[in-house]
Length: 272
Image (tube, rainbow, N blue to C red; front, side, top):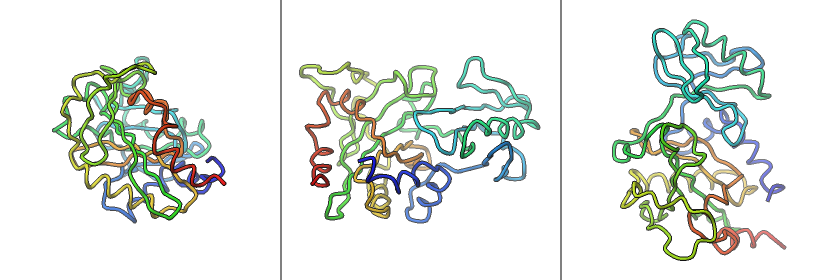
């Protein structure tokens, strides 16, 4: 699979190029790029050359597993890093310079986006950062693209990252949280949180159709893609797509090896 995904992994690995690709081909919102820094320089300045007075996210242009992810909250003409208990407080007029210095750590630089909150219908899930859906689309060898699987995961209380948070499988037709697994547990289970019970994700049909369109617009190099989506007030908003799929999370949520499901049946078409 790694060899087959190389071209699309170049696209999905560059969050700036990826956002442009999505906007040109789909009506789904994509997390906005407010500024980009690379090798200690600002190469895409903030609007009006100053950071907006809203919560912001900074993260590497090309990274995985939330490496370098930081959340910034404006307060008293400064920005406080709230995703790290020991994070800095940076004066507003020095914020761009601080991000430029941080960008030296990452080969493709650092980007800044608005911090997204949840749609009011699922706002009760947000106890720090918003819940994020990991949605798997698959391209069959005949070119047909389908939405195969989805989970919704929320961060632990007071945290911004998903690590250690509870999750639930999502019915890909209805966009509704599935019932918790009632059989034998093959993997550690973190799906029993009752906040997911009877949950319906707002804008699910548009999300499903948009992701299928986008996967179909890519080259045939990636049979499977894992999309990260926040169900925000303005509609389902794409954060990124990944050629790594979070298989263990799906096995945990479904208490079944992914080798037993549709992922492997699809991939088997590509194995000669």
